[in-house]
Length: 85
Length: 349
Image (cartoon, rainbow over all chains, first blue to last red; front, side, top):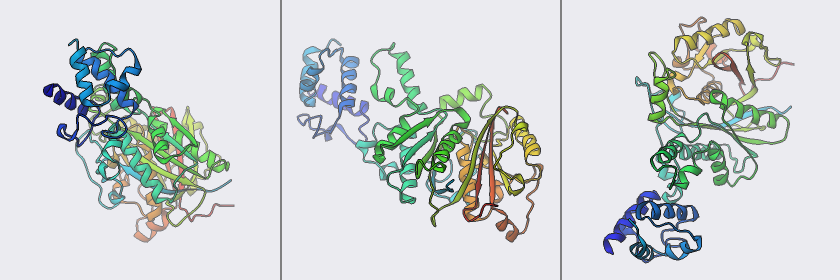
């Protein structure tokens, strides 16, 4: 799980172009949206693309995103349970 | 009709960014492709804000912000942008992924920022400006279209302030294509460059005003049939040309000048700022600065071409810079004329 969390952090930094942010700076339990990383709705779209491209997970119900993208830890847990690649 | 002034101009280009230092000490290049010298963008944006912006957007926002600041305008009545290519870097990234990913799983950010009007709209969002917002994407005359729109609206009294921009980036891939097609990077041609220019136009003359815009005209067709109703050719002190070192292009400029404006000294600017779709904005910028400073730097003069500078002593030269006509042409079909005068010049009755 720790390996997946680190990989996910690296991918999010790259995809969202989080300049000057390092994996260690991100608290895996902090909220991704609002506080914490302060992501927004466009970032949510980028995360949906990332999930499908890297892990083969297609989010059909947008409401799911709200739960899955709660934090890096929740996201990693969902990926570990549902990944197809 | 109101008199219209340029109260500030800011640039990011191959010259030192956000200053007029090039006027006294221009940076010279021997390369055929030069990217703009960027300021430290971290001084202007928080990383979290700027992370989605491509270079063209960062440059456009910074020059716009600085032009607004210098002219003491916080909320312009219009934001009008000219761009030949728009956000070409993001467009390339988006199209590359479109091909690579088989038209699936495309990144929304690059898609959103691949349109031409992203620039003008982002400036409006950052300036919290909800008024007139338009983008002109007309290849090599995009900037003049934007300038003319602003001038007409200001002259008619519909608006009092307009932020006019000219923005283009040149990616390595696009430069390679244009070079192969023979449009850029040819022998003796000025370098391919990038443009980020923002200028504040108002109907109020201030101490900071650089010059007055007398007229902007566009003409399509045989230029010999063009005659500007409001332009007294005999009053023009200099013609600022878009010559770029390509013999065929320059020949068109010189021949048209001989027909339309015989015996008027010629100036250039692409030797300093390079070639791009919106490079004519640098011509207007250079002319405005010449009018403000009351002098023409040697490197802007085309000494060997047709007409030598007619006033050689420094005193004569300073008194002679009262009216400059910027002339740009595209394939000898589209012609644009921007007439600038010294801000203190009183029109003839």
